[in-house]
Every structure is written in C-alpha cells, then in structure tokens.
Length: 390
Length: 233
Ligand SMILES: Cc1ncc(COP(=O)(O)O)c(C=O)c1O
Image (cartoon, rainbow over all chains, first blue to last red):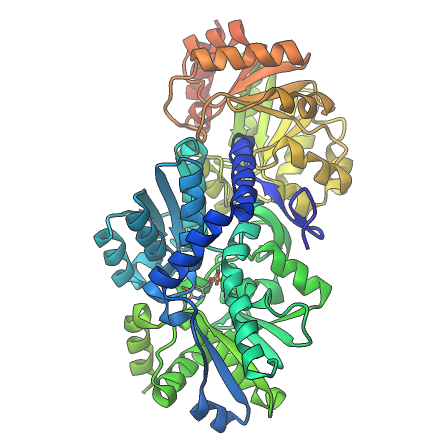
C-alpha cells in the first residue's frame, strides 16, 4: 500500500516541523529492525499472550444473530487487559521505545483507553509517562483519568479548543518537539506522520491475522467485516486480515447528532482532503480551511481527521465507509448488553449499530464485527442517555 | 536582515496594517505574515491565541491574501502558515495571487523533504527551507535545492515563545556547518526576545525574525514600535 516516502497513494506523508524529522527517521529504522528481529517478535508474542490476554476469541452472538437474521460474530478485543484493542499498540510501541533507549513516553487520549493502555505499558516496562487528554474528554471519562493516575502516569488536561482528541494530539506533538531526544510519542491511532500509521497498523494487525485464522478453523470466511473508525487503528487492524479476501469491508464513523457540520465526526463520508496532524488525509474542515469542531457521543471517535490508510482504502473502493448516529450507537449498546450480556464500548457500538440498522443488507450472511472495547468506561454516559431516553 | 512575524488580521485588519507600517518605519527588512490556522502545532500560547482571535474576528485565508497584495513593495514579504492552508487554498491559485508579491512561504509543518509535494501541486513561490539543531550534513542537499534565498533556522527544540537559552555552542556549531555547506542567508527564528538577542543573532547569522514578543504587542502600534526599535540599535 505504501511507497518509500510514506504515502498511501496521495495520502500520508510527514507534515510535521523539520525538527522532528530525524526522530521519525530513527523511529522508522528502529521499527524495521524490530520487525526483522526474532527475539523482539517473540517477546511481543509472549506479552500479547501472557500479559494482554491474546488470542481473543471470535464469539458467535446467537441471540442478536437470530433477531437480525444473520450470523454475527464478535472479535472480542473487549476481553483484553485494560479493556480495548489499544493495548496491542502500546505494548508494541513501548518495546520500540525501549529499543531506542527512551526513558519517557507521552501519549494522547480521547476515551482514555489509549491513555490507560499507555500508562499500563509504561508501568510494566518501566517508563515515565505523561498522557495528554482534552478537558471535555477528561470530564466524560473520569474513571480512566483516575486509572491512569493510579498507574503512575501524569495526566495533563488540555483546555484549548474543544478539549477533545484533536487538542490532546496537538499538545502531545508540542511536547515531543521539545522532548524527542529522551521521549517516545506513543501515538494511539493509525494517524500522524509516517511511520506512525504503519507502526500502529502493524501492531494492530494481530486482530485481523487471528480472525482470519479463527474463521479458517471454522471452515468458512466471513462475508462482511465491520469496525468502527475514529483515527482508524482497530479498523485497520482487523481489515488487514481480509483485504485480499472476498469479504465486503465496512468502516463505521460517528454520525453524531446529525450530518450538519460540527455535529458529527464522519470524516470519510463528509470530509475533504487536507493536511492535519502530520498527514494528508480526509479532514473535516470549514470553508476557511480551519479544522472543524466535531462531535460524537463516544470520545474515541470524536476526531476530525482519519488515518491515511483509510483515505486510501476509501478512494480505492476496497472499503466502504458509513456512519451511525449517537442515538443508534446507544441503542446498539443497550441491545448487545441486554441480549448477549456484553457491554460494548460506545465506539464499538457504532459498528454494531450500522449492522443492526441495515440488517436487510446482511440477511443470512456471516458478519464479523470488531468489538474493539468494553463499555465500563462509558457508564456515566450510558446511564445518563438511557435514563433520558425513558 | 531584521524580520518580524505578525499575525494576519490580528487584532483586526486595520491594526494589522498599522503593525506592518510600524515594522517598516522601525527599520525592519522583512515581514512574515501569519495566515491563521486553528491547529497550530508549532506555536506556543501567544501566537495560538492571536490566530484564534484573528479567526474569531472573521479573517480568512482570502482576506489575508488580499491584505498582503496591498503591502506589495513595502518590505520583504513572506507568508508563514501551515500546509493545510496552502493545500486547501490551492497551491496554483495561491501562486497566481502572490507570485512577485512575496519572497517565499514558510510552512511550519512542511519539512524540507515534503516540499516537493506542494511544488508538485503547482506552488511556484519559493518554499523556505528549514535548518534545525538536528540538521545533519545529509540534509544540506535539500536545503540547497530550494529556490528560496534564505534558510529559516529554528534555534530551539520546542514551539514558538518557548523559554530557552538559544545561543548555545550547539547552535553556533550548527550555524557554522550550514554556512559551510550552503550559500543561503541564515535567518534565526524562535527564541529572539531582546535587543541583545537581536545583535547576537546578527553576529552569528545573516538575520533574525522575532515572533512571539512582537505578536504580544501587535494590538498597540506605539508599544510595538518601541519594542521593534529596541531591536534595531
Ligand atoms: C474501544 C475503542 N474503540 C475504538 C476507538 C477508536 O480508535 P481507533 O479508530 O483508532 O480504533 C477507541 C478510541 O479511544 C476505543 O477506545
């Protein structure tokens, strides 16, 4: 997919201050060494299995399958240590940071899942850790803020802009421009300048590789693969297992309150091409070329940009990108909880919502949904909305 | 060469124009005009706040480009902004509007190796290359290939307005390396605050540009004038 200068077709690149270029080169070099080093890969595998809890099962959710007239399979990333797929990437990048001799890790977080996963990897591999989190997000994901602090990380609340993921990424990049000699920026999604999208996709590819093998054992391929898309890490993780198959692949973004600008985070459906936070990709921007202030009920999808691989996969036509609204995601969250006894993260609930809402398209099919995380962190929001609904 | 960075449209169009006039009458040779972008990842709080205020006052890339056209011939002119502004405006259209008006564009998030991307899309105005404390001998080639006659030296690791001692042995060594490997004029940016900094910069490099400390005073032409005069002695 990628060419030598870090582009996927026209998307990607390294749109960051010149000062960071040698650090990105060093990171890329280190990543290539890592991928070719059997010992490092064995250590990663060991941590995936014994620490994070891989492989995660693929679960045939029979009750919702019956209700919606298809076979719904859930890739249970929600069962991982810390409760989401984010840990796959933080363990991997923490090993890279150690290889590069860094002492400190910085990370941005939206829902707090990547922040907690970073704080966890830092605690276990012995790094100092600072997590940047927007104020709005810190308020709506308070439990995760407390967890990060308990894990020994410093949490820096970012009060600029809307106080969401975009502002946290900016703050982390500003830290990194001054600190890269000692610090690794552990970016949490398949976004940012090359080589980050590739690195994150690599560490998340375990989701797709495992799923492909698990379906292989069941003796049937999935007809459809669905994942939610914020920056795009869980989605690119599972999609990579099926890009060369016949499966229909669907990424689901946040339709938010409405399709009016500012009300959603449906970057690939509604955005234009732009340059944002390190790469050229689709972007939600206004008529004056300013980044849009966006919205989603789920902090992890509340982001105006998207990783370059997804922009490429959209334009190439291999992957379809759709959206689900806040209310649909909340309803899907309740549905899975009541019918299967699994409380999904609000991010993952967007993928479920799209499948439930469009069940006609999937009648009789084997549909694999990436259940990227569990909903514990969302409890206050779930509670508030579901009470309001009554 | 003495340069000042001013945020376009801040605090309003009229006062921005006064600030430019003030820079010229204080003896500055060039002005870098900021087109505001609301995700300014190389800027500290002062310039970020000015960008937000400019946008809140209704400034757009279009209004600032129009303002720049009226500055033609007053001083050396550069546009300093972020890649998305040029990309979205259209590199070709931007060139049509400002070729011959400005000497170059400085894009804080466009490292030297990416400049070909915007050139390939039709940006005909020279893209000012960067040098940094990290510049390696192997980076000189990219600097020298640029059509710009200046190279912008980012004097510290960090964002605009950061507090740091800039005239370190490390910086002096890097400037030396660049002087030997390039005949572009070296302009020191980031970290210039006082008259003493300005004189030091002129001894070591070919020029400097002051940003944060000027933008801090941009709303008040007489304060700005006093400040800029203190850098020309
Ligand atoms: C459970 C879960 N799913 C999905 C996401 C969205 O991120 P990405 O698109 O990178 O997978 C997040 C982000 O916080 C998350 O916590």
